[in-house]
Length: 175
Image 1: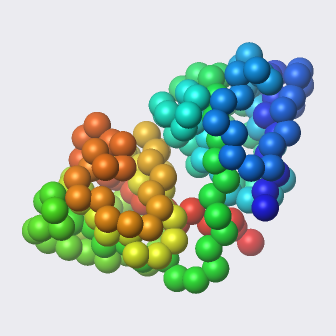
Image 2: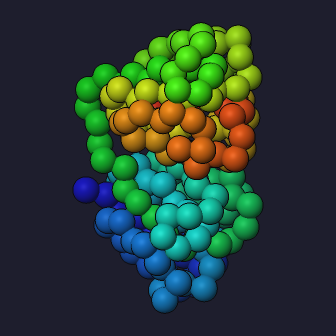
């Protein structure tokens, strides 16, 4: 599985909480989170308990400050490990709800969806293989959303407040 350690202070200082699986509510272990060390696995961390609020995708590495994971603040209250996927990655995105309109299939990361798909908005998608991260802005910036295999008939199905997707990336460890 994976291993992740959360620290209250910047640069891996202060109280810490080590985790090797999903944690629905970490508030009893930490008051805040200012740095994280990911020893193994891919993780989605969440601003609020029960996997709610802003989401942040982390791979193996060190994050000495919440700005290193593009965090808005030092509040991390839950986390989930992303199961490893060894096969192909495939997602089909559509310009309209209910899988209508123009469609494009992605099998690799895409830093600028608009340049490839010619649309700024994605209203539905069919995630065929692997887990994917959708970002509101190009170059893997802005709000993030983890999507697992399945059908998403409208953007609210993956938790978004609008249909703007600027980039997308496969949720996988780099080797």
